[in-house]
Image (tube, rainbow, N blue to C red; front, side, top):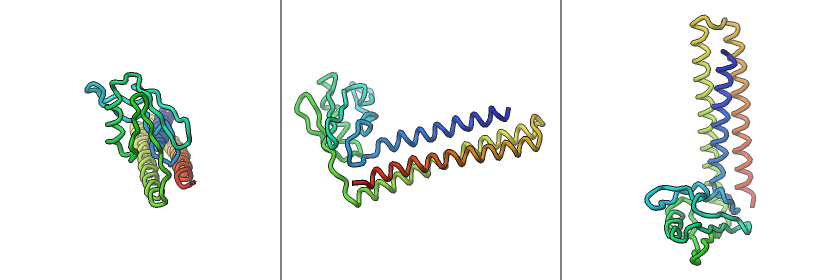
Length: 185
């Protein structure tokens, strides 16, 4: 039973770390990356659809993303979605291909993005601590119902804390890597 609670907590913490990693992938770093636009929602025939399902996204150069829609009729919808996003990039459309030129980041913008990374990392840490709290409540419930002894409860509590520390550290490392990527020129 204790293993079950710890495994559930570990799975939840892993999901929080993965979510952070995916979220940070969408932050612009001055280098072109398909992950900047893959998840962008395009209103395609009235249905919000991820861009990666509507077009071929490639990165031919370090500062350029090209988007080739499968359906040429979706070109205007894709362009509109890019303009409305918070990317701050104006698309160039030649009728068959949309080009996104990634401008280099200013020092001020880099610092702003680093603050966003910090905020998202802190949110992930809070989520991990919430998972710890939930697992701790489950363990207390097991102890109250006399399904585990007091010693088992305290040992499980220590294991849970080690698990929490491990994932808080992992999330911090993910954030630090993204921050280094943003701050490098």
